[in-house]
Length: 265
Image (cartoon, rainbow, N blue to C red; front, side, top):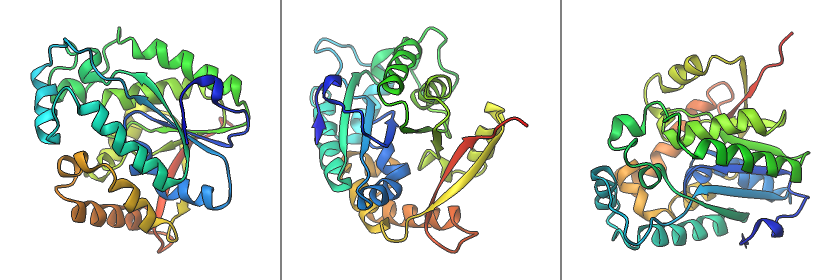
């Protein structure tokens, strides 16, 4: 079910997923979400960057390049992606809320104007920092006992990094950091990110053998993104299976891996 206003969000969600974009929760956590729903747990996916740019917006060269890859008309790109997300959330069986914030390429095109800046250090004056700190704080106050899931920031997309920072500062102790898929599949991407954030972390794995096919079906909902991220739907399914096997190499099972802050002795 889509939740249209914050007032509709109840107090009884056990798990809250912070998804920077319209696909991140399914890509990185779909198997776990499906297990939680199979156990009849209350799960809410909160997707952050879901707003359409202004009708008179002047798109940067980077934004235009993305529109071309997605094969979507600039005037309809967000609407089309929201339809995809509706289908994915239905396949995951979860409640979901769109916060209506702008993606980096629309929010601050002067700062994020090419690949290096979009996957670099977030602009210090990016308004998303303060907005997300307040939003995550409000969510935690509303649901103080919920476990929050947020991106680790592997791959360094600025929206993922800012979401990570807001979660670290405001989500409280019940925080799980997910590996940003498919960025985490690049050689040494995970190691570079954990070294860069310089926090004491430990990980756990969630076996998803029973939910892997349904996770792949949920990701397949994002038709506009598959070519850019994987090359094809078939390649996506292979990549999801391959990384789930790598993440679970110690268990010989398909898994998703999550990270948490280690308690200081």
